[in-house]
Length: 218
Ligand code: SAH
Image 1 (cartoon, rainbow, N blue to C red):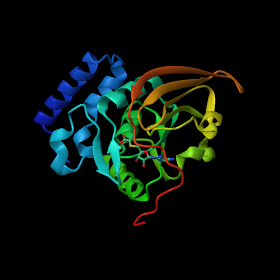
Image 2 (cartoon, helix red, strand yellow; image 1 turned 120 degrees about the horizontal axis):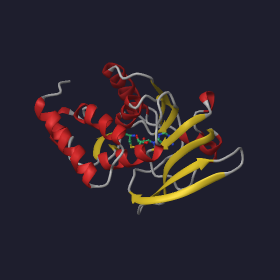
Image 3 (cartoon, rainbow, N blue to C red; image 1 turned 45 degrees about the vertical axis):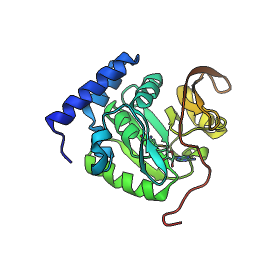
Image 4 (cartoon, rainbow, N blue to C red; image 1 turned 90 degrees about the vertical axis):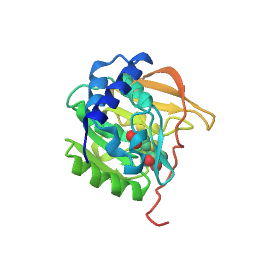
């Protein structure tokens, strides 16, 4: 894996594009300027890494569009040392951004093939505080709750109760909710043991949030 001047230049341009599209969170933009997105794509597709586009990563999944990552991560408002649960590890790019922001990251993936590949890859990148789990994220990750932040990177038909329950009081859950035609980004803040505040944002398009796990070779 090599990060050339050309890659750095393309990344800088991508950051400017994100700023033009309305992303203002400096910490998020810095993290995205630091993490080489081309490491997360197959060598043959490197050219695409700094276009503001989603891209196939195998197992019928995609690496999210940079704008989407920037948007969701801004809504999360991460503070250092916070415990963050991600549902949908995919390529590991979003997990990498969370790690660079100083979070303690717990990330869950239901596709075994992708889980195995990304777990090794993230380890090789030496990014701090990322733990990968092969699970169905619709039940969250109860062993390590509560989480200060939870991010779901697949389209949910509704908000899984388990995720709301595993959120710390004062915590924030960011999740795209809706059907195949598009999902509305939701930011849910846990106000107390029993109260939640929900705010709705822009429309996005994610791969579906599925239940159960998909074992390798099946
Ligand atoms: N955050 C990823 C985006 C990957 S796409 C990245 O930065 O690349 C969404 C991922 O969510 C897919 O890999 C898909 O397999 C996974 N997914 C969908 N439903 C899930 C579930 N119930 N539990 C865990 N992962 C799930």
